[in-house]
Image 1 (cartoon, rainbow, N blue to C red):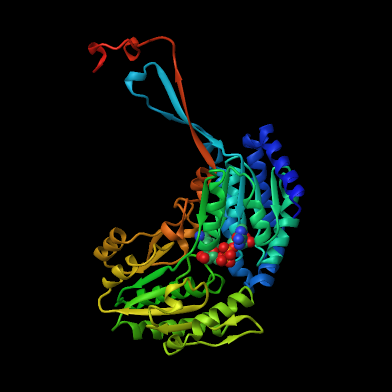
Image 2 (spheres, rainbow, N blue to C red):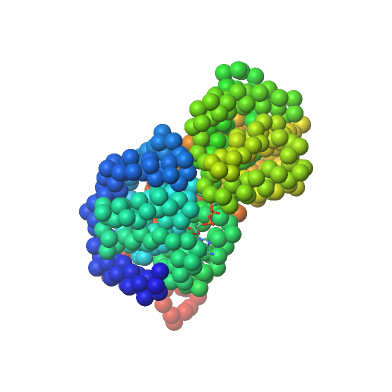
Length: 457
Ligand code: NAD
């Protein structure tokens, strides 16, 4: 993109913001409705773009992207008035007479980077927040999902105010150009490596950032004696590992922690369920591109790791498919156990006592999500108290993403800042303190000249 072009585009959105039109309820509502119309009208185009980019089945595409977005827009539409309203604050007697409120105001011109694994969902979800809060914005789509990126850049604008919402395609170079500009907020979804670049560049203008990053999400599986509970747990683990985009999900299950004696039972059930869900049906997405495919093969081909394969392990360069793979006790210092996997490989780490998994997790970087399957309330309490993560979900995986009432975001190396539902509105707003005083009562003791009488007044 030419620098002049970028400057023009930014000037246009700045002017739009200055005009004040994006602050009105009706503007925000109209844009949100535009997103909803896009999702309804172009549902089939979205499905085929996601199929092209990632081999996603349309049911998966609806469950993880279109459906979640429809829910999020509707939630924003039904709460927008309430979110926009100022919050009255009770003032202490010393301020009498006065009134005060916290007034949410839009930040201005915001920049959003989305990610390729949920290229529609992760582009539009923050957009919903930025619109709800009354900002103007530039969205950079994910270049590794070109069909979805094209659709967002070429078709979504037909449903939105193009003077306030700009969509730009491009990769690293465009990303760098955008980061050199001055923004009122940057919302970034992606890797820790680029997250650091974003934050460094944002520091130049003291621009606040939200970093939605990744990491390894551990899943503790306690010994479940009830067969039905165990089957439910296994379905949810398999669904949370291979279901969302073939494991290419920031909150996907990264590895399991399980007691030695329980591991064989769990592995048997995992294998049966994987076969039923993905091998017989082939309802599994593919790896996004050759580089990521090679990255996963490298994780698997470390010699010490290959010996730990208990299921799967094959891959096909032509189709970019990596077989769902289970590995038991791969070396903890291997790349597989030190890097985020972001793919269909599932290491299982066995521990003597399930409580040992707490220390295992807390010794490592803070995850975006922790999952734990257990009925043991004491264990649950200990996991909550002794670990830190963006979220903890007991007895399920992934579902926290779709809950508007819960904040979504990381902590430590998994990122910071939160969004979804009202948290998205807040992420793109400034809560301005407004205090109204009257001329009626005046405490002159607050002014010099000082004397001892005024000391403790
Ligand atoms: P990435 O960090 O390489 O790229 C993200 C974005 O940054 C892309 O739009 C890219 O064009 C841009 N970019 C790349 N290099 C840049 C540079 N030098 N300057 C400016 N912009 C640049 O993304 P990735 O590694 O392919 O994404 C996977 C990571 O994202 C995983 O770690 C995953 O966990 C994380 N992720 C997090 C979430 C979340 O919601 N927390 C969601 C999806 C993915």
